[in-house]
Image 1 (cartoon, rainbow, N blue to C red):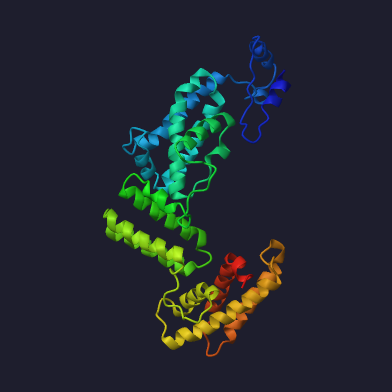
Image 2 (tube, rainbow, N blue to C red):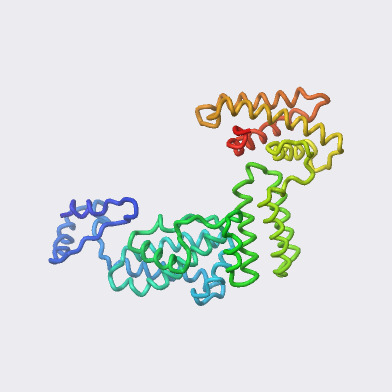
Length: 362
């Protein structure tokens, strides 16, 4: 009998434990029989489902208290909860505690002791979905929740207009403006726009690190300077979004005859060589020509070795890095010293890795 119970307890995807229903009442005889074994051999082999109810109650209080401690007494105030989750640390804590609560609820259901917690489970899952759509840095909740509770909360969240299986809306999506327009107030609208921009920056920063670093700094300056002047904040954020959508965010100041795929690499070259100083027109033209040469070298190598970034191609990667370094060092008059040449070669390599698909199509 102990072996049969142990087999039920084998875990798998979406299965934390097994449930054995004792219709006849033999569990007490089993407990008596297990006395013959050492405690460490049978620990956890058999536990009453009733023992999970206090755990469920405690985990429910822990997740709800995250909001109560911040002055939010009603989970129905969804926007207030989502705003509170603007804190990244709190967001991570909420995700961990919510998953623990939903895990216990999945174990207890469909026993009647679990039913009073289903209402809050639905509300908390909706808050999680709203926060995921806004901050765009949390995974889908359903993968970590048992089947019973997953269906319960998914049906509820979908009925309120959010499909948990669909990725959060990005600022380049056609429906983004409509999504923002549905925000509860100007503060919520500004928050949606801010975090859409931050998500876009995170997604593309490796392709153009200098541009997106400066955009991030500009975004922080806007939020710090304008504070809660939401109309002005929204207007400034809309300008950034329009520039990102049009592709004009990084084109200002670039030489007109510079190929588009070289622009991000020129910004990296300028950042390393000029160290924050504005180059003269002659210096800019020289660095433009150097950048085109370096990018042409990268394009030639990547097109001839399309799987160069595979782990087994480390030798090819090191060879390409060496080619970049040596090319930089051959430039006369010298562009940078040896240390900076190594830094520039490394940065161009990382940028080429992130831009691989674009470069092989040039």
